[in-house]
Structures are given as structure tokens and as C-alpha cells.
Image (cartoon, rainbow, N blue to C red; front, side):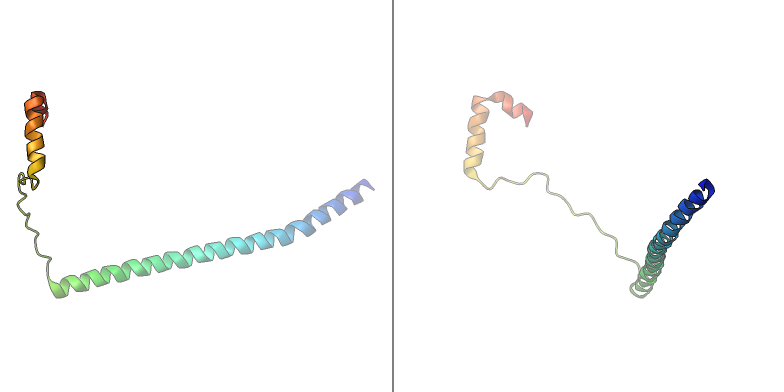
Length: 100
């Protein structure tokens, strides 16, 4: 009787485990298939991007060199009231001028 009970439990476990494992294998296969398709799409996209850049470079030639613009050292203040206020602060607080 004990052997029969053990075989029955094994049959029930297998009856539940086999369909569940097939479903999980199907889900895993679907995810794996989608990952492979996305990887192929990424590789094709990289190849197309490289081909586009190569053709554009061959047709247009090399890109022109950028020349650095001169940056003005210090712009004049557009607000005369601000200048007057700074002069007044410089008279009252002479150490403030040293920090600038």
C-alpha cells in the first residue's frame, strides 16, 4: 500500500509539473525569441547607421574644422545704477573689492 501511495503522489506531481514546465518553457522561449529578434534589429540598425555615415562622408567630404571664437574678457555693465551701488559698497566695505 505504501508503494502504491508513493506512485500515486509521483503521478500527481508529474501531472502538475509537466504542463507547468511546458508553459514556462514556452514563456522562456518567447522571451528568448524576442531578445534574439531585438538583437538582430540592433545589429541591422548599427550597420545601416554606419553605412549612412560612410556614404554621407564620401559625398560631402570631411567636416570643416571649427575655429574657436574670441571670448570677450569682461563686458561693460549695462546698468549705471548697479555700477554706482558697487562703487558705494567699495567705499563702505574696502575688503569686498579684494574678494572680486
